[in-house]
Length: 356
Image (tube, rainbow, N blue to C red):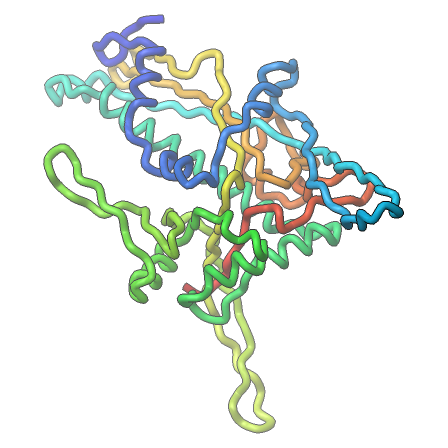
């Protein structure tokens, strides 16, 4: 459909292609790191059923068991592979922007479509990353049953003080043991990133634009892992007790700020876009503020952390809000329904809690 927006021809499909063609640094690096990957089975699930907002798919465990002695006398017993049940979700988000006719008039026809297009691209990039962080916050808040708590405890390293040179290596080893090499991405607060830079442990990436100007990006590397810096990462202030230093003296209270850093491995988050009926459209109110145009944007995605099942126990509508995604009651380790849970070492997620 072709219409007019701010005096310019607007074509929904062409505009969508334009938005998708613009550089999306964060999304690109998430995909390149391998920590975020698409899943065709989940995509097909939401495309192939009437209720395309929630579904359950099987997830296969790994084969195991003790090898038997092959000596011509010992019978060879057979074990089967476990099949787990996994809940996966789709969510939708929408936003609108408006421009006045007067703005167009007083700026001698500035190309607002181009400007909005550039900002729509980065806007949705930030929104998607915020949703991803909400999922992680929910997963790492799980406490029951005991298998969920064991996962959170084993995949969380609490640092007494600030992050040090060996912190990342210790965290991923504690989480996945000899499988620690699957980790590829770290998402941290700028305060943590600054501390790493002060210790010369992180190197910032740079980007040179068409004019030859070079600027630093909120991307870097730490121990070979891609680093994303995002100040929406969890920050909590708590009060702790410290010994007085005097025999018999009352302990003193001290306030500390703790920062959460997430470490993800290959395929930790399965994520992808789902089609919507109308992704972009425009409307016009000729009387509002002397004339005003509106651009509407809609999108739907699926998101599924590996080895974790979304149970939809506390969700008010057909699309969960970020607050609902942070609710730990909506998440559990993948299991077979009979008390058998996926091994936590197979889940490439870890969390570091530090004072910077």
